[in-house]
Image 1 (cartoon, rainbow, N blue to C red):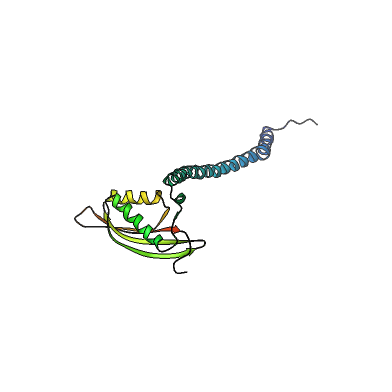
Image 2 (tube, one colour):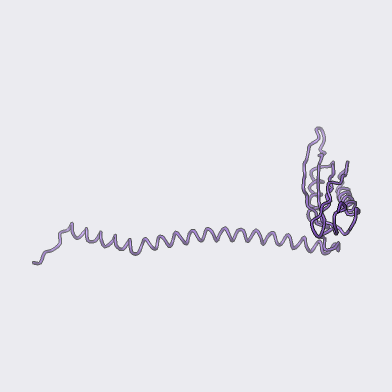
Length: 181
């Protein structure tokens, strides 16, 4: 009994072989492709984060070199062990503002707290000046020596003038314990 397959059976057999090939070969390849695409997206994100870190490290390296060149205790802290640390920070802010043409209306002591084995001193100021002067002051404080943290900053416009009223609070590390201790 030698029967020839009907055309319908031949097409069904071809379809069955193609389906088996798809399940055995194409599906695993498509799954692998999807997995690799997902890994590529993750790696692209990691690469962009690392590029940002590298760019940031170049800025930090430049700041460190500028700080070392200034010769102020590596620029990390204010070199004082008593209340003069606050006075030095106030004088630094007053000098930085004067260099940029800002007017200092008030200066006040905000805090002096222990951060073992050092302490953090903070001062606040009310300044008046233009946008360019304020920008230059902020840049100078953030990139100069000693290392200063700007903890609060607000700007109010003054109607009828180009002057701004700036409330600024800065903090820096000083040697030793708090004066309150």
